[in-house]
Length: 170
Image (cartoon, rainbow, N blue to C red; front, side):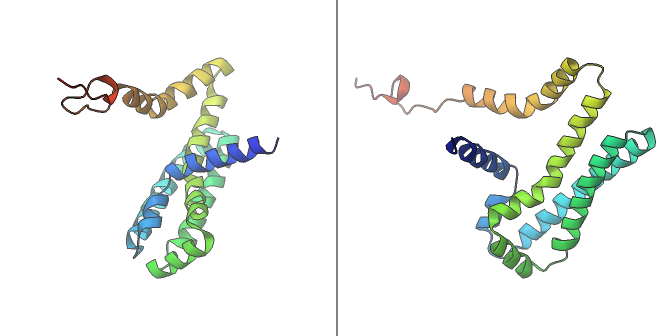
């Protein structure tokens, strides 16, 4: 019974790591590029969440305002805490915390953008079915296009090979 939650948590962590600069952090030696990427990501996230916060606050959407404020606070705290470190200090902190843990930590505010948008669709939609359809359609390009490209792309066969990579003698 415990195997399923463990496998689900592992799968979720692997999916989240694909959204992060995890591989770059593991392969980087000087961490200057990691620091630049971290600052760029958090600055972008802060700008997006500030715009959502300002729009929703003016329109009176209090739930969305609170959600965007929460993720904005996370992004700004991350930026203040890690963005001012030197590359060497950042590397030490990441290695002490663990590359995967740090990568997921800095991605949470980015995921907050998606969460706030989904919550906005749910609150603005007149029906739950329409909201689910809109959410699926908005997420479809990120899921459907890679799946479609994977099914269309086939490995190229070398000359003399038949279908499935089987060598054909002539």
